Image: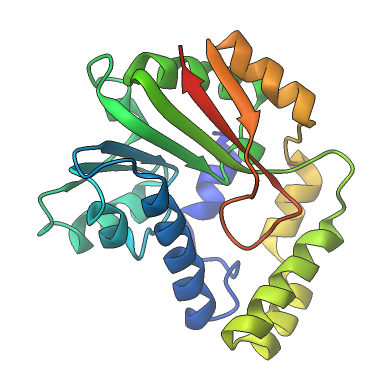
Length: 231
């Protein structure tokens, strides 16, 4: 991940409009990842897990869960909160790279690719190919498309907020974001975007047979998700 983005996520920020927003955001993602777990013996990696407020939901559906987070402060807090759950391992990216080949049944990379360089994403896909068991599933979601404006993200957030009881906080949050460090970083560094064809080519280069998923993980259906099977 680009170092400036790691620094942003590792410091106080206002991406979430309030505690309600953060809670329903992570709860939705946890439920949707849990639904992807094929059987209770599965070993699952959530790469770029963030605060993973409801990781226990995923752990309830699987045998073991690895939560990988690059931001040190976020990772330390996550490890402290989940220390009593023997099914969950909180790790740094370099620790994931040390796992034995063919360890995992499911890998989810949600809302991370936009913060990676194309070369970085390619290297990560190659690592995931090594770590997945034959027939294992890689799910890459929240992919920004080249022709979708930032306004689409704001509209999706406001709809999600209206449905979940934090609409007024989200309205203020959208305005605040325009003047935030996040927006300055986004304007300076940009976010990596892919067409559907470009993503499929990237998966194929790493040895995956992939297809676009029928829906994205999370609330924003203007973004794409993909299912990639290890050959």
